[in-house]
Image 1 (cartoon, rainbow, N blue to C red):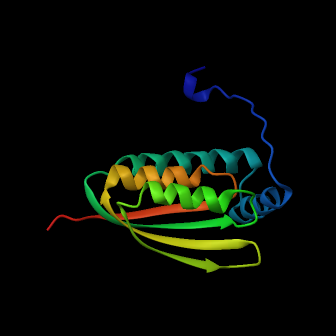
Image 2 (cartoon, one colour; image 1 turned 60 degrees about the horizontal axis):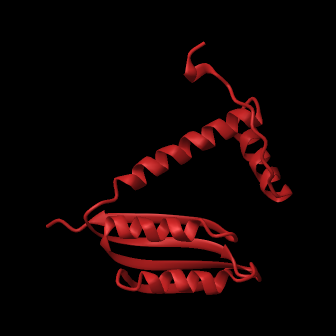
Length: 140
């Protein structure tokens, strides 16, 4: 058996609502099992990581972020992180989506590595549901 064909068994803990939503999607898309859906999701995550690794040079960009504003200490932490990156943040927009979920849009300009680092810092925080970085190069 080659290394690509060796299977490893893992266990994960998920909130019930997240698992229920995942099950709906894998059923809709016709996956034969949760494992197939999880493998596909991991492949997509790896592909996204590779794409993010190519964000280099002078860039203009936007981060869209969804988070739980009731998560203890998260608002202060997100503000502190953004203050660390004030040199590349041009503007931000905050919107209340529901009673406890917020959408934030952050306009950026600077070195792609810094833009990516900011996005990764934000996405690693507990209570942050989603972070998407979109950039474009500034060549003439």
